[in-house]
Amino acid sequence: MSDFAPSDVRGPAFATALAGFTAKTGIKVKTVFAGSTEIFQAYETSVLAKQEPDVLIVNLYDKALTWTDSGATLPVTDYVKQWGLDKSINPAALADWTDSQGRVQALPYTGFTWPVWYNTATLAKAGITTIPKTTDDLIAAAAKLRAVGIAPVAIGGSDWSGEKFLEQIIQTTTKPDDTKSLMAKGGYCADPDAMKGIDNFVKMRDAGVFIDDAQGLTADNMYASFLQGQAAIMPAGSWAFPQATADQIPNITLGGFPLPANSTFDKPVAYQGFTASGFWLTANGSKRLADWKSFVDYMYQPDVAATFVASAGDVPVVQIPNLDTTLASQPLLASALTKTPDTVDYGVFPDFFVPGAKTAALTNATASAFAPETSSSAICAALDSVYN
Image (cartoon, rainbow, N blue to C red):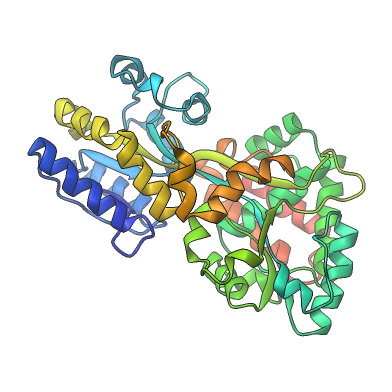
């Protein structure tokens, strides 16, 4: 079961990999596809019916964070060394997939980088020639953009993209350890530094920095607004790089989100991680462990992994010889991996700390923050109510 459906950006690479695996091993693969938001429920339904797939391919997010504890999936800790995967998988990727009890929840396969995109051609239409570095710069730029009919920052305030974005802004005024605690346990209203971040968010929202009606928009709306030139800026992950056309790419600069004067960061903030997709071992899969290992061995071959980089813009987890050559077809990914790290600080990624059982409720609570006139105290109260 996978969300690498034919219509997904990873679909063609996945289809090619499965065909190659069958040709090499003789093992046939039946695929069941589900959407990126539906797959979590689809998998849990299959577990309850005792008809789960042998291999599940999905990211570490939401309900998936609870699966190792509940027994819905099996940890793969022992197989990392037994199968020699520790020699090919980036140690940082294994760390991202290791829970608080030291269990590797699944085998990481692709990572992500999540910068802020700036369309310099769209900014230029408003007379803006430099990328905003501070929130004051951004507020000034927003006024100029709106004066020529361009939305400043596109965001999907009603879904996961808005939740990650709000957390990104809040943590610009908090210390990393405090941010982790807030994401895990709540307590926003009682944390003065977190409230500074929320106040900064409200200041920008009320100054017109975010696209109109953001509280009702989704990530798909965000992509469309930016790529169609209706908005000048968006925070979007590397999975969206292939959506940019060849004529748009030269005008896209990748960076981080501007900082307030009271920020605890030195550089604009972006996200990165290695939890974009992984291979989960199920109860049924454990009964066919030899076939499961054959599948993993094949998928971790550098030439196979390289196809997901070249065609889908995935950040590789395995070491790929001549990675520069592989990245040639993905100029935005190449820039994100080689240039962006020097210009940004990477923040605490929420998915590593927000409890799986709280994810959906936190996303719903976030939407209200983008609504006009929602106060800072109302925003923090909505966030804290998720944990209370």
